[in-house]
Image (cartoon, rainbow, N blue to C red; front, side, top):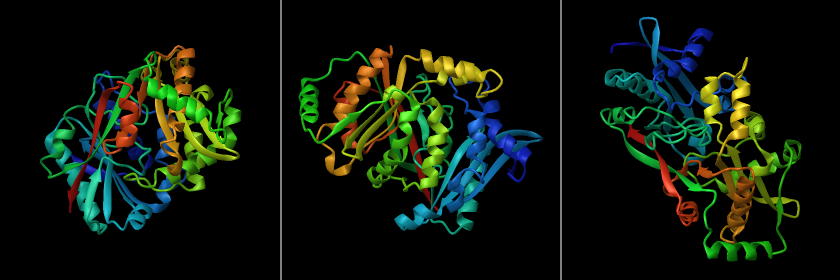
Length: 372
């Protein structure tokens, strides 16, 4: 299809950019729409602080007056300076099943990246690893995960013709909440509990979480520093991230380990609310909130969204201690399934912890690269 690709320059075009995936995925039963109120905040330059240190471009492809595709280009100046790179990113890439159109959208961002003086282009990868990353290449029939890409199966294939090659793969796992834990885990748990210098902190209300938000995210900065694509969050970005997800947190699925006043480990799980978001079609108002809230209360799958252990304390069993406590809370709440969020294929330590539970690999995502 020959379509006109236009840079987003007004509110109507921004609305088209946000809404065009709903048209593309109209017959895709397992597509997870964004929560549109949150999406509008994310793409608002005044409210998303990531725009402050990135060069960006957003474009919509039109066939006549109908939007049929979109793409975003990002040059993350802070990350590039930190890593001494000249890398551009493409993200939020979607289009109807048309290879020519997909190629034109990629070429649009490629030309923009070259004009920015960049030497390579990677994607899908947005501002940070906490945004949707990678094209899904396996696991299309399983439950969608909040904060991950939900593309159609043919889209990754369009990357090969423009000369992209795989850069990184990410995996998700799924296992039963009623699993029989290996004996080694019970021994590790007893050892961790008996250290004496560490305390497990559990929560019963969101108000109790507030004083832990910044310490937890500061620990994330420290622990994730070596992971691909991660850059340290500023205090403003930490607070913005907390506001974005606070309403869907269930305190009983968050565990923190402290040493005195210092947070040294944490894990965050949330009930999978995909069914509610799909039922609400991404709209909180006027009645979408009811479907999302109902899904949160009735979900039988707990998604492990984020976790960290202070680098020098890894291997002491703190992750097992938190994990077993999360498992207890999940079973008490009627959860039958635990799913992980994206884990880098090269993160062998984390994969080993999960795979010892006989967890099944469920979804597979791929990030691509191309030299310019």
